Amino acid sequence: MTEQTQATATSTHGSAAASLRLPRWRPTSIVWFLVALILALTFFFPVYFMVTSSFKGENEIFAAPIHWLPQDFQGLGDYIKAFDQVPLARFFFNSALMATIDVIVTVIFSAMAGYGFAKFHFRGRRFLFFCVLATITVPFQILIVPLYVQVYNYGWADTYAGLIIPGIMNAFGVFMMRQFCYALPDELLDAARIDGAGELRIFWRIVLPLLAPASASLAVIIFLFSWNNFLWPLIVVRSQQLQTIPVGIAGFAEPHNGQPQWAVAMAVSTVATLPVALLFIFFQRYFVQGLTMSGMKG
Amino acid sequence: MYFVLPTVIFFAIFFLYPILSGIYYSLTKFTLLKPPVFIGFQNFVALLHDRLFLTSIRVTLGYVVGSTFPVWVLSLFAAVVFFQKFRGREFLKILFFAPVLPSLVVVATVWVVLVNPNGILTSVIRPFTGQAEINWLNNPTLSPITMIIIHDWTIVPFYMLIWLAGLSGVPEDLRDAARVDGANPFQTFLRIELPLLRPTGVFVACISMINAFQAFTLQYTISPGRGGPVDVNTTMGLLIWKYGFQYYRMGDAAAVSVVLFAMIMIVTAIQLAFSRGDQYSLQ
Image 1 (cartoon, each protein chain N blue to C red):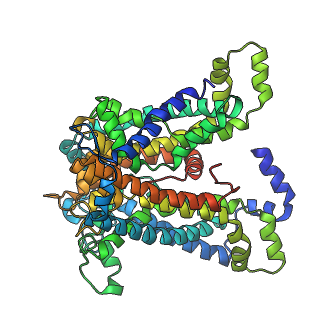
Image 2: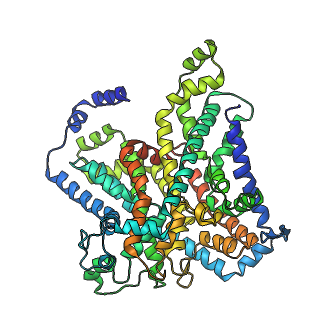
C-alpha cells in the first residue's frame, strides 16, 4: 500500500506533492468548506437532536425555538426510565448475541469459501460460485414467507435458533473474500504444503491471518447489518425476552402510541445506536471500505 | 472443494430451498395451520382484482421513482464537495456520514419528533410556507413525501461513499491535462469525471432502486395504521408482511413476493446489461 502511494506520488510529481500538504485558505477552498459545513450540519442535525433530547425534560422536546442544549437537564433520568419501561438490557444482550455469532460465522466461513473458490480447482466450481453469488440479487423480502414456514416447520419459530441461524451467512462475504484470496501468493501456500502442513492448518495459520484486514472490513459491516436488522427478528420472534433492540424499541416510534414519552424514546434510540457509533469511531477505515464494497444498507 | 462445502450446503438450505418453496407456495392456498393446497395461478388472478395489491404496486413504484432521483443528485453533489481539498474535510465528512449508522427504527423514532405537526421541520420551512402546522404523516399527499425525505436522509451519505470511491478512481493526470488545456472545474467535471463515473452511476442507480423496492421498516413503524393514511404508504414489502404475518394468508403473501421478485429482477437485468465488464459487475 505505502509503496503504491509513493509510486503514484512520484509519477505525478508536482501537483500530487503539493496536494499532500494542507491547503491554505484560498477563496475556493473557503467556498467548498462552507458548502460542506452546511451539508454536514444538515445531515448531522437529527443525530444531534437525538442525543441532546435524551437529556431533556419531556416538556422541552417540542420547545420552539429549539433548545440547543437541555435546559431542564435530566442527567441520566431518561435513560433510567427507559431501562425501567422495557427490558432494554435483555434486548441489548439479544442483539449482541446475534451480531457476534453472525460476525464470527460469516467471517470464518466466507474466508473458507472464498479461499476454496479462489485457490482450488474442482468440478462445478464456476457453477457453484455463480449459485452462491446469485443469492446476492435475491432480496430478503422474497424469502421471508418461505423462510418463516421452513423455520416454523423445524420448530425454530420464536427461538434463538430461528432468529440467528438463517442469517448466519452472506454471499457478499464469500464474494469479497474470494477477491482478496486471489491476491494471496501461491508460492507461500505451496511452500507450506512442501513443509508438510495440512490444508486446514494452512488455512488457519497462513490464509486467515493474511485475510485479517479484509476480515475486519467484513466484520464491521456484518455487525452493522445484524445489529440494525429489523424485518427477520420482527417476524420470527414473538416473546419479548427474545427480541432484539430494533424490534423491542419499535413501539417508541409509533406516533399514535397512547402516551408518548419522547425524551425516553430518544434515550432508547441513543442506547441502540451507541455500539455502532463506537465501532465506526474506532474502525472508521474498515467501516468505509466494507460499506463501499457491499453497496447495501437498509 | 471441502472449503466451499459448508457454505454451499448452507445456501442450498436457506436460499435455494426457500426460493423454490416460495414459488410453490404462491401457487397454493396456505394458512400455516394446514398443509398447502395446490390451486394453480388462482392467487395471481385474485391479485389482479385485489385493490390493495394494485395500490401497493403504485405506491412502491412511486416510492422507487420519488426516492431514488434525489438520492442520485444529492449523493453525487456531496461526493464532489467532499472530494475537494479544504481544511476540516475529514471531520465534516464524519458528521455528514452519521445518518448511515442508526437502524431505521431509530431513524423513524427521531424523525417522528422532527415531523410532528408543529415540530422542527414545520418551523424550519415556515418562512416559505407560512404555515404553523403541517401534518407530515397524516396528510395522504404529504405522507409518502415525508417517508422519502426520511429515507433519503439516512441513505444519501452512504451513496456519497460509493461516488467518492468512483471519483478517486479517476486518474489525476486526466484532471491535470484538462486544467492545462484551460478547462474550468465545472467543464472538467462534466467532460472528464462524469463519463468516467458511468460504472459507479449504474451501480448507484440500480442498487438504490432495488433497495427502494423493498421499502418496509419506515412504513411499518411510522405510517399511521401501518401503511396509511388510506394506504398511501402500503408498499409491496409491507403488503407481504400484512398478508403473511397479520392475516396468515401465506399463499397470497408468497404471490406478492413473486411479483416483487420479478420487478426487482428487471432492474437487476438492466444493471447487468449496462455494467458488463465494469468494476462493480457481478461477474
